[in-house]
Image (cartoon, rainbow, N blue to C red; front, side, top):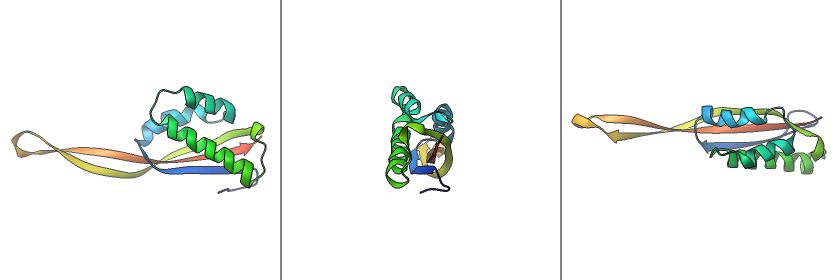
Length: 115
């Protein structure tokens, strides 16, 4: 997947977690070179950091194998997250009522550019 010359992308659909929480992790890697982004994601304590790291590694592999880009010069140009689907569940509450439980999922897209 690529939009222009010198860029490579990778994506993940259906990542368990809200887009707000995923965006906290993506904010830290935007604009950084891929080696420092991978170091941050390996050290990050948040649960969504591990699948995001896999997406970055996939984008690096796409850049290297499909577009012949230099891995040492790659930078995270874009890291976007969007809402996917929401599982709607319910929990029994007092007096025969039901409480709503929302289980959100997100879509992640990483674009790497050669600098």
